Image (cartoon, rainbow over all chains, first blue to last red; front, top):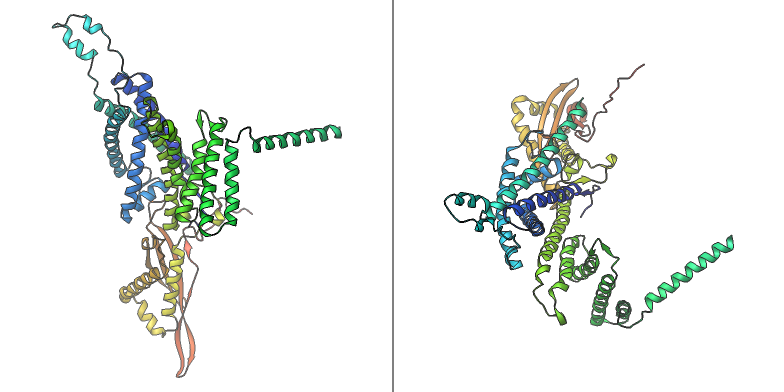
Length: 194
Length: 342
């Protein structure tokens, strides 16, 4: 089948995927640790599972979509993967199609992570280890002045919001890396011009 | 001195023989060496057996080999990366070869896609099997590692899948290989030998179209030719070229290659030359490419008039000659950065 002389390996893809996974796990573990009152270890474990899970579902979606796409869209993807921009688009400028696809991927992965969080909780079959709630609130006599403070210091853990926030953090970091790469490419291009 | 070296060599051979002997002569019969031995034995026997027994013995040979290798690699804690034993992946490779071999009768490279998944199942087995190999729900502290195991192996499998997808694309759109993809964030080309780089497929299309056109315009009455090349008859010529291009595409069509409809063949300029006309054919590549504009190939054909002896006398007929295809990655002009100095 491979009669051509070109051997093409997806090395950058693998390196970028590993880098993004590490960044996402680190950032999301921190958010989960702070927002869901999980121990550090549990939050890292959860973040790892969630991110691996969302990458797997992302891959499955991509591989299935690729077989279903009509040619003009497939050619766009091929062009993006080989030449770093959609077919016929202006080089070196942010592309609206790409940005909207990025936003879609963000919300898609958010939903995937909520589902994944529930599934993992079910699978592990117990509540994740949580910090013992600090008891300083209960020591105080509940009263008119204590109530607003109580809401701030003891927020009810909200997994969906925590996951949205975690997702936002990791995607921002990944976006930053991509922007840096984009700028570096442009600078290299300028260098070759002069 | 020589004696010392000889002594060393003898010692080394001695040790090697002893280790080999120890490997093949284990302390108890219940060991992986026995299984490997059984595997070799039934493999050898399968040559002697006939028909069905060949298959059965060969299968037995495989199963003994798989179990033996699993035992050997699990018992040896050195075969590992960090804390992760490589045993499931080594055994998984054998199981993959066995299963794929049975199902397809050969070993396609595609088997790489299922190798991580089979290895993950093998790695998960010990935690999912209780005493006497009864299935059980894994212990609580083993559950999350199982999630990591299966998801990471699925990702690995997706990478292999992506590799094959990229190779498929290169077969379906061979012209990509004629371009440069240094800027890609996904893939890297390993063979960078420029001289062996492919020609864009458009050269074939353009050559064929030109030769058809040559056949049709050759040896015609010169007045007919001039009629055809007239500006007001241009529509007809364009249509003719379109028809030829469609025909050529159908002729060279292959089920693997999907890029032919992305090549657009157009009539370029027709200009006067001293003894005839110059007709230009252009092929635009509108498929995946590194530049924004469509890549362009050109081929120019000279149509000149010659005298030919016929039954009724000497008549003026046309003669068409075409140059090789020029343009993108085919015959790029040699650019010299320095002007020649005297």
